[in-house]
Length: 321
Image (cartoon, rainbow, N blue to C red; front, side, top):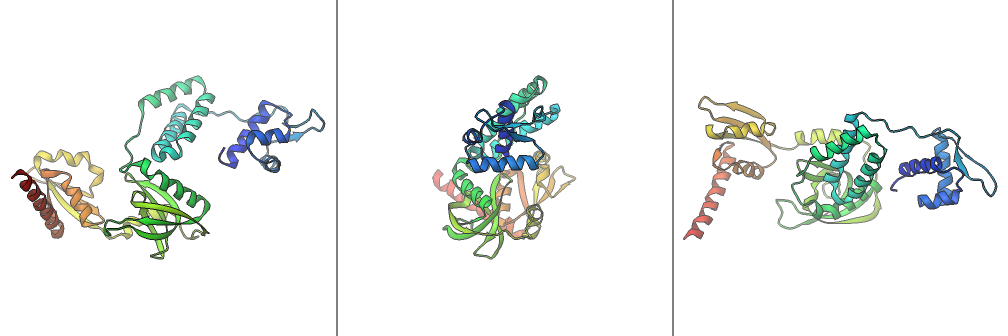
């Protein structure tokens, strides 16, 4: 049991299934102190869930006679949505939430009526989302666990961070505000002690994370959704233009959401544009399509791709001699 809400629900079920339980027995079952159990009773009373006690050797705590937790009532689509959501949590977080996801799913399946249970069984065997990570999730788990804890407890961290521009990791202090998964990567967003501003860091580039004893207060002005919406707009971007030849134009249709603009040409070729944070990123994206594509602009991107191709050709020619 990981939080108060879970323990409160469990407490209600314990009292519902077996009235007249002593506070000490309930504390042992919940894994909390006697004082905490009495605090839970007060919380349940504030929530309108009636609990009363009877004195004497055979007395104890009970729910008011006739009170029952309302049953879970899902439509077929709602039941499937809950199951798919549980699967996504397990896929995204791996070991950090694997057991919790399995436990939640087992409890849900035990409570569902037969019709919903059949629909859930179909969903589990027919609907799946995989391959969401572009880096090894298991390797990132230790860092994710510490960052999750630091975010929850508002504790600063020290991390060794490796950027693509610097050959060695550098030490940075960070107040982690949020963990975000997007584009196949895990990111941590927080206040960077080096740059004195809110920044985003890729978790797979963090070599080491150390939890500090010092705590922080999140900026009252920070709004995660607003930050994510505005982050890309604030970053400098390169607009790359590529031409796919006529025989490879179908590739464009298969990646339509990736392109900023798509312009079919009279000869059957297609010209596309896409934004990129760096020239290196744009060059890597262009080379991914091999001879199917030609870089048109900007000129410095075209030059970079040609230089990379020449260096690669020299390596292959040297090996063939």
